[in-house]
Amino acid sequence: MSFSPTGQAQVLVWAPEAEQVELILNEGNTSVPLKKEEFGYWSVTTDLVSPGDAYKFRLNDDQEFPDPVSLFQPNGVHGASQAYDETSFNWEDDNWQCPLLEDFVLYELHTGTFTPEGTFAGIEQKLDHLLELGVTAIEIMPVAQFPGDRNWGYDGVFPFAVQDSYGGPEGLQRMVSACHQKGMAVVLDIVYNHLGPEGNYLGAYGPYFTNKYNTPWGPAINFDDAWCDGVRRYFSENLLMWFRDFHVDAVRLDAVHAIKDFSPVHILREMKQQVNQLMETTGRTHYMIVELDLNDTCFINPLEEQGYGMDAQWVDEFHHALRVTMTGDQTGYYSDFTGISDLGKAYKDAYVYDGQFSPHRQKSFGVKAEGNPGKQFIVFTQNHDQVGNRMLGERLTELVSYEMQKLAAGAVILSPFLPMLWMGEEYAEPNRFQYFVSHTDPELAEAVRQGRKAEFGMFHAQGEAPDPMAEETFLQSKLQWDLLPLEPHQTLFRYYQTLLKLRKELPALKHLDRQNLEVVENDAHKTLQLRRWHDEEQVLCLMNFSNAPQTVALPLNAKTWNLVLDSAAPEWKGPQPSAPTANAGTEVLMQPESLLVFRGQS
Image (tube, rainbow, N blue to C red; front, side, top):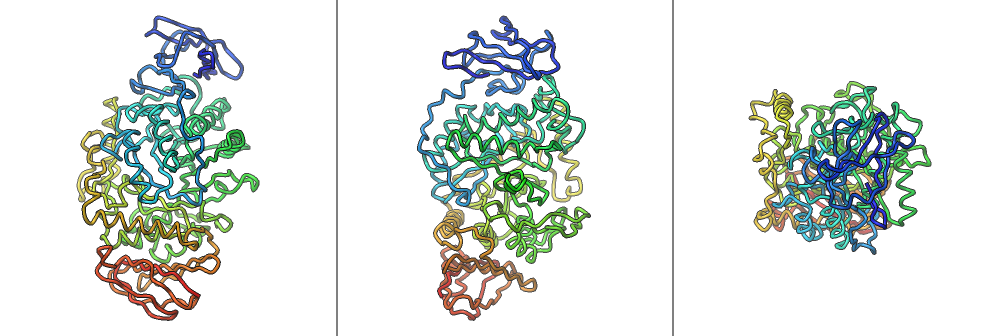
């Protein structure tokens, strides 16, 4: 539903198999019939509905359902839709220019647990903290309407509606405008591979789903079966809405490997083409980022190279190699990774598996990413999946030492890729981030409880999986902002600031040139040398992942190496300084679990 400049409501519904469609107003006392159009659409223009009015649709003179394109569900997933004019918001970001992708420093957060308020307004109150840290883009977990008021967001069932408990559509628009006024980009996590189970009424309107394929969450969305044109338009229009009407700068598309589409033009490629057209019209820049578990550069290659044109992707393999290097844990999918040699490969090649045999998958996996620039790969030590999908939701704070946390931060931030931080890691938030939902269907709620227990059945020696339905599970996942000024939290925050400042100010770190890079790993001593350069400047990052002191000879590529950061220094609450400025060839001592950063002088 949209509103014309004259105030009339223009109503359009896709219901290709319906015999009759009516707009229901005034709690069922007013009915407005829709006219059948081509290709399964029904429409009407009326002055009987205004912004703020509640409404539903009645199909075949039978059941009534909320609008599948509802922008606001103030009474939850089962309640009536509320008309909202998304074009009426008074934007204050006319001069906003989205940063270049290579300048993105991402910060992933969950709206409900990021602040005590758990709202978009709460996020606005913390923007100065993120700016002070050095973040240039916040990445918000999905906000499409879900059941209840507690959910990670991946159970959304109204792709166009903004979660009411977060502040609804106007709250999101206000927050995006506030971010832009402070010079910060906004990335929105969206889900086009499945919908949640409760309140999912799309199937009542038409063949939004297909039995041709299955996903881990049920039937796949119908992108290539009978009547798929209407489905493809639905999700393409949804993407364009976030960019056009909510001024979102980028989207992160969840698990695109679970999008099943054998059409001649893949839905992602079609979406990218439409986004390019939008950018030509508006003059604004928008990016499409994907979560991808295929190591297939087809997704991120340009349209002119017959790729899908996605601008960047998450790289879980960098995380896995780093995690195994830090902890030695090789359970589950970590069994594919041996540690520091794989971390070195991730620095050099982005993908660890680029064609070789994967024991975990029991097949050859991946392709080489030789022509893809560093800005196309997003790396991290933690994210919502890698924390929240652990049985107990432990953060890295709980799994490794304070010294190793500092080393891990440097390993990510000084990489030739885009760094992403997980909310709270910059000050070592101790609260776990756990899996939580608030389904109102008792049978579904119990099924989720039992499913979570079964998933971690072999881990019961470590305790019981928290009850995802319990409000306490949600509340215990909130950040504790009162810890920030205390130690060692404040020192770690300043350390993150320093790393991000180095990344911004040193040309060898700022320019994400994967060719100007050299990596030397020592498996026996668990050390790694990462050397990057740009023009005449060089930066050398020495990493000691072992629990013992190690000596490393400085390379001969520079006459003098000036120390610019030592994670073991007292100013970072480290045990002691490791090495002063030294000449090439000099052996320097590295403290256990430490990072040294040198700037090279010819």
